Length: 421
Image (cartoon, rainbow, N blue to C red; front, side, top):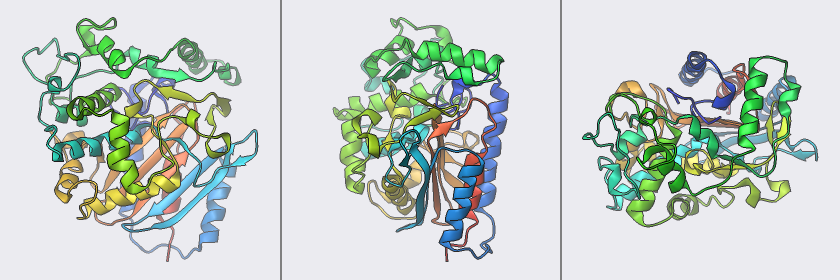
């Protein structure tokens, strides 16, 4: 049910959770459409219609009402400031709590970009090299049984070309704070309802475990879920396959290389320098009035955490994340801040093969750089232009059970074509 898609991009390039989907080809086509639309909108001429901020507020508010979105947060930034930001709808519909730019919510696979910059920081600190064998830093061995003499490097993990499959066991990583109600009863009878019921029953039986134990069970030869089929029949670096577990494994590499828990490393080297004081790793740590409820199929579901939290478990708000994206834009356009300018250039450039369209856990397209995210109750997007320091952020606190979810694209178009002068 995760943030991008199997064989393409799951806790991540996806804007819906993978568990509700039966047709992977359809997912790929949909995500291709999303990315192409983002690229097209970014290269539109600057001859935009004259609108004021109030008209933009009205247009977005009308969009939320027409499309029955529950909560929406947006921001438009450049290299040094927030040009526009606002919240619409509800963070908690049942208790009439408004969604604002300070509302904290999960951002799904956009979280992976924090793994990327953490890897670059650790490399600049001399603690690892992206071309190192991952087994230099892991507490267990990960070897593709089809190519036992071929190493898997950190760069392979970061470019989704490691040869690791997420497998069905990935769904065990979702742990909810309470029993998920039978929201599938609101759905029309059919295959999607059957699948949603199946996965809700599975999630209700999940329990928390340490991240190293979870990944060991899948990829170490002595793991309880280990199978040769957990690996591709292709050498690392030779095939792109989006892997949430590969991203979580990269966070373990950071822990092994630095001797610091991943959460602490991110806080010390990223969150604190940018003053992201309202960003963390668990919705359950926030007061009710400060966080968003999670909505799936228009129904409230319990808060949840994921065992593989580095790949999609970051929680933040529009205000905090705006300054994160501004910092990334500054780095891309030549400023050394969290890492060196050279580090940004490497992180935000094609790795292994340009056809993979991946930097170091960043989506690198022809004209834009960023990431999307999708999980139960989460749809997110954050991109900026390669030629212009102009970025857009969209957080939605709900998701649906089908692929007809054009909201990210349509909201992106509304924001990009507005004249902010």
